[in-house]
Image (cartoon, rainbow, N blue to C red; front, side):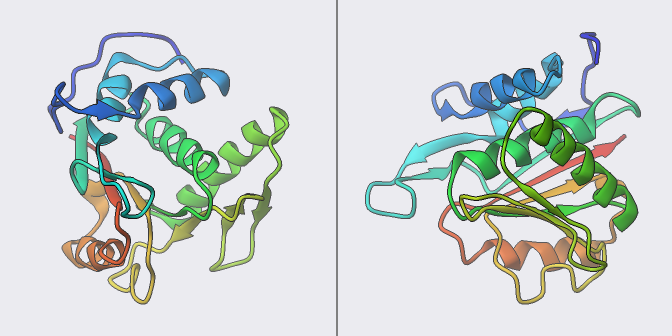
Amino acid sequence: MTKHKTSPLYFTRRDRRRASFGEEVNTFAEWLGWVPMEWQQAFWDAALEYRKTPGVGRGWAYARRTATCTLPRQNGKSVALLALAGWAALKWDKMRIAWIAQERRVATENLRSLFTLLAEKGKECTFINSMGHERIKFPNGSSIEVQSATRRAGHGASWDLAVCDETWSLSYDVLQSVAPALTARPSALLCMISTQ
């Protein structure tokens, strides 16, 4: 990926008074061999702002529950979400991460590409490609799983992180089903990126 200037039409803005895990995702993306774009860094910085919550969950909570960004086509949207999901799965134990895209096939291909990069870098993980249960499993108990873009996407699930790729193609019913799956976790986050 080459470094170039792309300006999102709409995105969650950073509050610089808060701490953020964004730089860690940037470092992780570079470790994978990607060259993060300015908008990706800005998105990670804003999405991953947090506040300390002693004695609750992991001792911190995201400053917001939802982060969004819209950009033109072919600007690294999926890469931004892959870096975010991969970083989160490796950073914390037992993270349950959902990947929702316009098509299950596309979501599975994205996860397979992340798995391949991680395996090439020597990270121990397993790619499971069983119809309806596609996922990457990590030794620390974390997983990134493909979810169908249906109105039952989040039914009965509890996720720490849900990423929606190409949100424009997801129906309102899908987005309404994802939100409740994030409420049971003390620090859950919904990240949505889409074409303008």
